[in-house]
Image 1: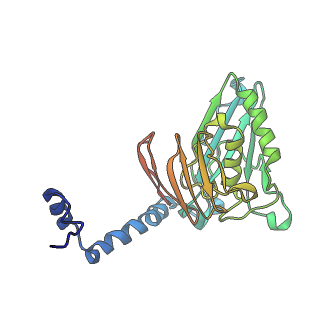
Image 2: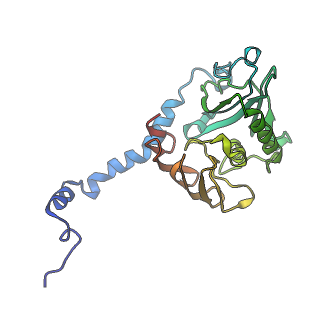
Amino acid sequence: MACLTETTLLPNNAREALKALPSRRTARPFFLLFLLLPLLVGCAGLQRQGEWWQARRDPSGQAPDPAVTPEAVLQVYAARAVGWRGVLAVHTWIALKPSEAVSYTRYEVIGWGVDRGVPAVRINRTGPDNYWFGSRPVLLVDLRGEGVDALIARVEAAVKAYPYPSAYRTWPGPNSNTFTAYVGRAVPELRLHLPPTAIGKDYLPGGALAASSPSGRGVQLSLFGLAGLLAGWDEGIEVNLLGLTFGVDVKDPALKLPGVGRVGTP
């Protein structure tokens, strides 16, 4: 009896398609290009004028003027990190303004100075929507009006309960994205969908192996932020490998790649 192979069991059109595929040797350059693409795109996105500390940090115009906006406002932003970190990662923060307030409060985690005793959680280091050293922030959450004051109170309670107020580690966490993801889990009504470039979002406090996703509408497994799996209605399916995220967004079809972020629908 003749031996049966996997290709023998395939229909003719499938066998022809397999024959058309490149060999392992010819496929290697394409595989390497796929691996390098996130790095190349990330580097291209980091081109800024001058030294990073001289880069623009003025308002981006995305937070409504509190002088003419009496309603409550709650926003979450993400911008490319400074220096080499920006090749792969973004920095995230939260800005809020209760009803009738005359100014915003901005909450974020920053690593600079933590080794000298400076708290990791910083308040009002700069304006609510300012450029982050040359990088224009992307608005992830924008809630206004009725019911937002109650959410603001819960966000502020989550900020106070954050378990790493004096600790920072660039990778795998806890970092700025660990903080923002923690608040998102504590207040799922934010429906926070962090980008795949938010390295540190998968670092679960206390060494937990499972938790809800930052959007509150999914679940995730994580091994100290070094490896994990996430599945959710808003996030789709994500695989975390050494802090890098690969995935597929099903709700708004797109691929998720390290450094690049989402590739597909906006």
